[in-house]
Image (cartoon, rainbow, N blue to C red; front, side):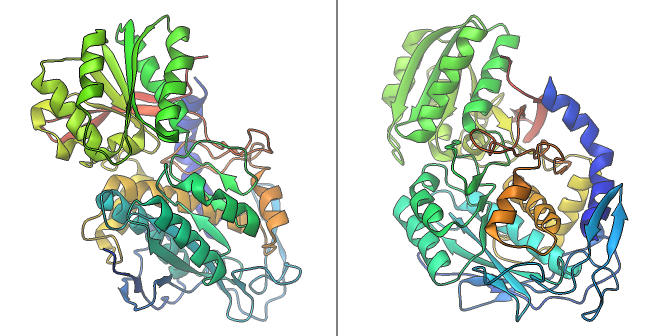
Length: 473
């Protein structure tokens, strides 16, 4: 099965991560017929190219784990590293009753994602969507999982809260999605939680929202609060003693302020200022001036990419030479999402927390993703940011490993039981920290630790300057 081959790849590169983690309005879409299953490992497959589809549901068919399995095969036990896994003869064979989104007749499981495919955050949203679609294509090209292939339904939320809520409701009620994967938009995601909880639909790997201890929500990347704490640890390592924060007037900003409140005292720092900026506003000047006047030596920001670009420019124009670090979403670490919006001189030296490896890294898993991305021709390819594509590709890869561990029982009860057992047997994706979910409370923050990268304007490249590790406590 793909997951067994994947584990071999993952184990080769997970050891270092484990050690480190411990110390516009138009609908657009694409679909492609699933290629035939092959005998090649998933890591070497290029995804199927996508063709236009008038509906907004996207996808593929085919099954990702079984080589040479036929429909009339009898389930059998196989050994994998000492674990016994059941080979499932048909899609959902071990699922009692009907489960939303699991098509036992057509052997297709429908999953969903909402992304800012157009609008203010389109560059990130296109990459984020492309990463999920690539993972779906790859799984289907390699035979699917336990008799099931996967279809991706997606919607463009334009980086608007109301639109994301509408999208989630539509995908639950009309598209009948079984689970959501890699949905992005930290300020909007919490608004969807009432509908997510009411439907019981799992949300796997939302991109950087806060942990709210909700049964259906699993965070596969460190929270923004944790990323902010790691930025502050890096400041401390550079000798900073006075630190400030600028955040949006929402939950995103609250996480930055929580991070500075927690971590500055641990590092013996003085908190010089905490300033708010309105969501989607270009008026950042008052916050910038207040931070400059505070005498801060370093600044933690929790803003959108455009706002961060403005802050960097205004700091530079004022001759304010402080370190600036943002969470992965705010900084777009590994890409040009923020730095491309600022003057090169202003962006030089900018710091971003890393939830995922840099997209130009030389690790085999990243190289494989890069080959798939280069060959990919689906939604999000034309303007998508590769760093965000790698992030959701990694999130979706972990998701499909979890699906494989369900052994054909797609009930939500089994989904949660299996996901909450990962603390004892983590999912290892070499590009992100180990995914080790546990039970509530607190256990759905499934990853601990983040890295830090720094931007060099001369080479237009990012370099990881701090390894993946948990914040100082």
